[in-house]
Length: 217
Image 1 (cartoon, rainbow, N blue to C red):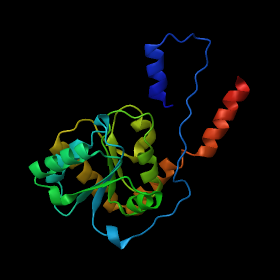
Image 2 (cartoon, rainbow, N blue to C red; image 1 turned 90 degrees about the vertical axis):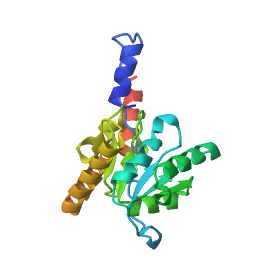
Image 3 (cartoon, helix red, strand yellow; image 1 turned 120 degrees about the vertical axis):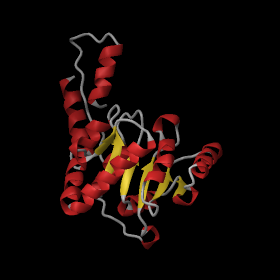
């Protein structure tokens, strides 16, 4: 649970004051993993990872592509129904970016790590998240992340991430371009900042916090 989740609970439920509440963040599934370089993904691309659901807001990324350099592609990873894929493909066609949108669907863990490792940036325009694992996973590999400033995401991305506060295409592209230029100006420093933010989340830390809760109870 994140702090915003706790605040929502306090707002919507009558929780007695004597009841203790704890905020324990998820761990990092990619902790300790190394990059996997691949010639298959030698082109510049933005990576979006997440099951295709309305609140994930992947559709907003399609028109955004028109305002980015034409060599930048968008790779979409996550469970996607046939209807959802057709919807994305139609949207890409309408905005004349069909050749730049790659829908991978579900992938293996190794393929996911390879995609993170070679990505130009992670883009995550989700409108609601309980945590936001793709953000932590991408930062583990020093990859720039551009994410929504909604629900738990600012807690996860911290100062290392860049944020969207709205979703019109030209504005979203501007934030992406600024982030990429900023990263390119000092990649080693920026990569270390991203990795440091990711390192604040670990399953070891989460386990110790849960043990403390059990002992307190």
